[in-house]
Length: 207
Image 1 (cartoon, rainbow, N blue to C red):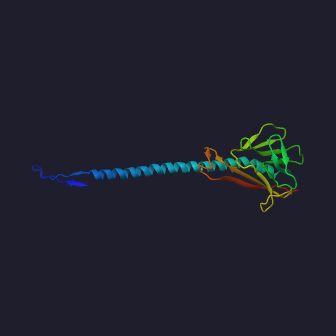
Image 2 (cartoon, rainbow, N blue to C red; image 1 turned 90 degrees about the vertical axis):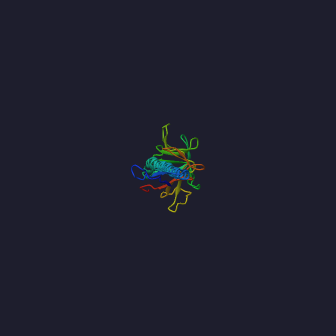
Image 3 (cartoon, rainbow, N blue to C red; image 1 turned 180 degrees about the vertical axis):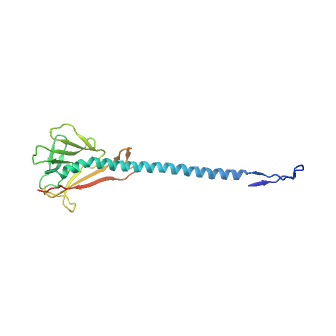
């Protein structure tokens, strides 16, 4: 900063000082100011992205917990459980020598096999749905599911069984390609490489 000191004022006898910035100093100050403003704006945008990211993950987790809570309760209290392939109007159970895995599970709350609850992955819209016997309507349990094998029957080591053992563990796997609330794509070009929900369920009473 350049200081200009004029000559003595003859009448007042007071020396006055005039301060001013040179052009290079002004340019440097403006550049530093722009850098600080840019940093503040970048930090704000980054914070908003992190907020959206956390909100999406928490929302997806809450939605998934609410969605599978009924499924978990029905499996735990079931009398008979069958795993296979099926949809709204059909179900084919896996044979005794076949790997107990598929896109659908049929849960019988009693020993009456004409009364059941069916969960199935619908390949037409990639949704996990729930229906009951004698009802043509469905309830969407989860959206944006990419894996076809959703249900498995496993032993205590996590190995898929080839029989209907009474003490088997039911495995549930949901692989999402999109998070909701707000909707965010995951995978190539998205915010995530992979998002999966995995749980294992056993019946309360074995017979």
